[in-house]
Amino acid sequence: MQNLIAAEIALEAEANPKGLPKWCAFQYRNGGVCAYCDHDLRVVEMCRRDFDVVQERAIYAVYPFTDEVLDCFRTEADDAA
Image 1 (tube, rainbow, N blue to C red):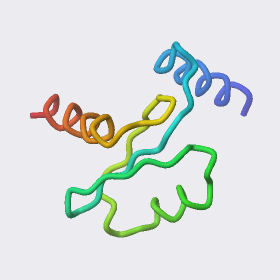
Image 2 (cartoon, one colour):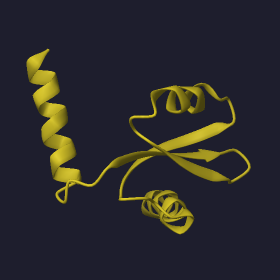
Image 3 (cartoon, helix red, strand yellow):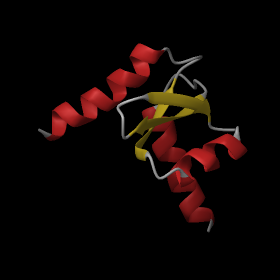
Image 4 (spheres, one colour):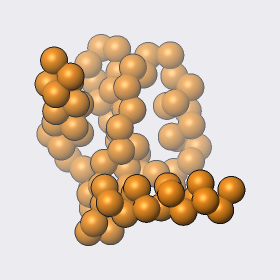
């Protein structure tokens, strides 16, 4: 268990070298997006259970603006195409 936790911490540190807060961003079937602080467990779990959510991404920012949230989904989609 300790090895799994250490690996997760190392991956997150690599993805977030500035140590910014982690946000969970969600994209909905209708194209809408939203982001919630990773520590807001109740809301994050509700979004994860929502059948209209089609994608989830992590964003590291002080407070992600709508454009940043949209860009994280556009970038991922564009790279796959």
